Image 1 (cartoon, rainbow, N blue to C red):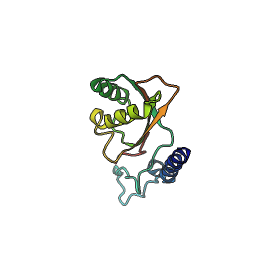
Image 2 (image 1 turned 135 degrees about the horizontal axis):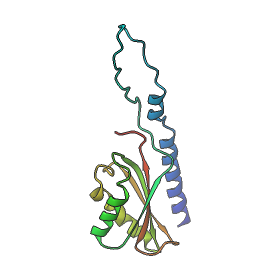
Image 3 (image 1 turned 180 degrees about the horizontal axis):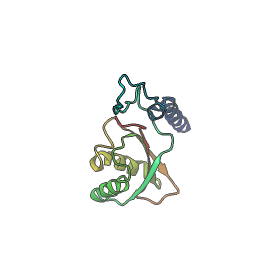
Image 4 (image 1 turned 120 degrees about the vertical axis):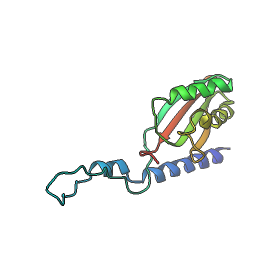
Length: 150
């Protein structure tokens, strides 16, 4: 039992390290230098586009949901994620409360794309955990977003 948890934790850490090792494409765009103009008249230069693979933010955003009704959970996810429009989730870690929390977390994760299909795609990695310090039928959702739109 302990070996399984240690293996799962190791895989999670390795996944986060491999995603965090990527360069930040937004930082490269911010430090880009304008190229000299060929003509004497100034013309607006196009905005440079990020080069390379997307990176994942190291600090997660967090929301809470509670309740048992599917409609209620979807509504809470939708409402809680409205403050991040246009963002795409790379990784979601959901911690369900009490001993049956893993099953509740799995249920919540299965409803993410129903609530926000543009934010949570089939490529979004999710993992289910339990938190014995939280009440039953509650979940803490930690969302790790990509640094740039895809």
